[in-house]
Amino acid sequence: MTDATKSKSGGCLCGAVRFDVTGPLRDIILCHCTMCQKAGGHHFAATAALTADLDIKHSGSLKWFKSSHYAHRGFCADCGSSLFWKMDERDSTSIMAGSFDEDIDLPVTSQVFMADRKSYYTPDATIPAYDTYPKGS
Ligand SMILES: [Zn+2]
Ligand SMILES: [Zn+2]
Image 1 (cartoon, rainbow, N blue to C red):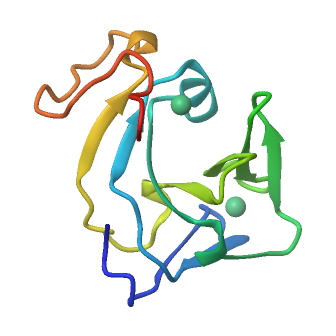
Image 2 (image 1 turned 120 degrees about the vertical axis):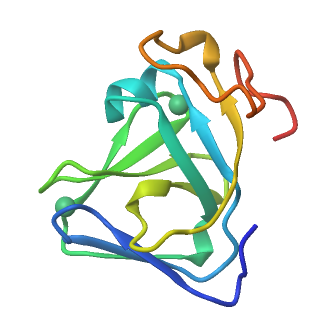
């Protein structure tokens, strides 16, 4: 978790979608599920915030794609940047770590869905890795 008192800003590549996060951010998770790989071209590195702490500004450029029966993915329809992942029943929203303007200075604490990983790169063996998603996180 980061310092909750300092707001963090980010946005898509073209600037049509901008956001501010006013609350704490979760440590970063690398997700290797097949859906993340398809959506981003590689694994996803995501932090998360309470949805109530996430202030999104856009002019219709943010689109939400229903990527599974339980979640939506938010992206910029103008430039294609992947920005958000939200489980429909949860009060938090995952935010792609690379979409922030500044370094958010958070550790990567787990690598999930490693069973779906492709073999073209070597994962960091010092980061805990799980075949699926660990229970309780
Ligand atoms: Zn954009
Ligand atoms: Zn994933």
